[in-house]
Length: 175
Image (tube, rainbow, N blue to C red):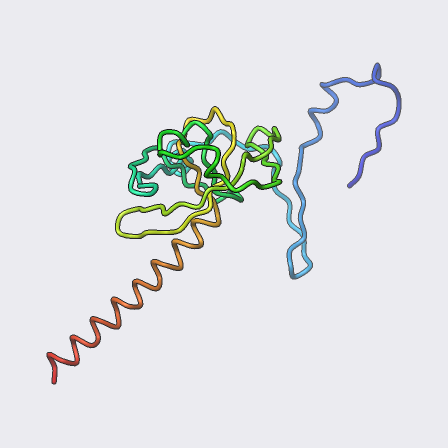
């Protein structure tokens, strides 16, 4: 149902709008539609536990870094400029990139450059390309989809190798 607004701003009465419920409509792959409320309700205690950010600790080129935020919604891996000096790097270590980054607030800023590092979490070392830029965020590194997909692939490969090793030991001992 589509409503067309007629008249001027003076005719607008907020109380009249209360009778219309905001709805979000979508059509599925199979062609039938569905409706849901477009107003998000306040999350309860159980739902809030799923909203907590995932922070990990790791090492960037053998230097320990805490407050590493893992966010599947981030398109790039990001390091605030303030961390460069702390890991023993400077602006000359950056490879210049002509990339505009957008923050979660929607503000745009140019990247100062990219930095290739080895990022270690637990026993997994992953070469990671970090975009460096000015930021006042409360994290030291932001790892996005690129890192998540890379680390997932490495973990799957390690699991397969471990499974193959276990199978070969099983054949040796059962022989």
